[in-house]
Length: 82
Image 1 (cartoon, helix red, strand yellow):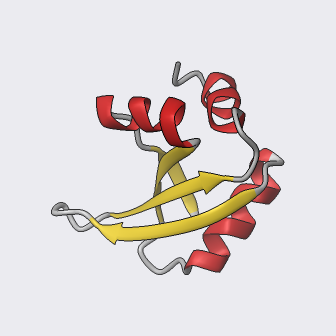
Image 2 (cartoon, rainbow, N blue to C red):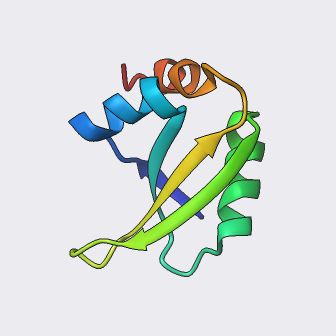
């Protein structure tokens, strides 16, 4: 399993509206291309870019920029985040 769960904070909520960006907790061994493919297959979206980072808790977090304007808001609504 590559995608573990959406990662939601107040900052992420602001990024959804402003930048069409979402964050997900992902498998520590997953590559950016694997994360992109998994998200596109799982949620039927177009991913423009993926940035990854390791949190202070040792978890891997992916910051995902979606290609279509408004699609982050739509996906967040489908996932029940908003």
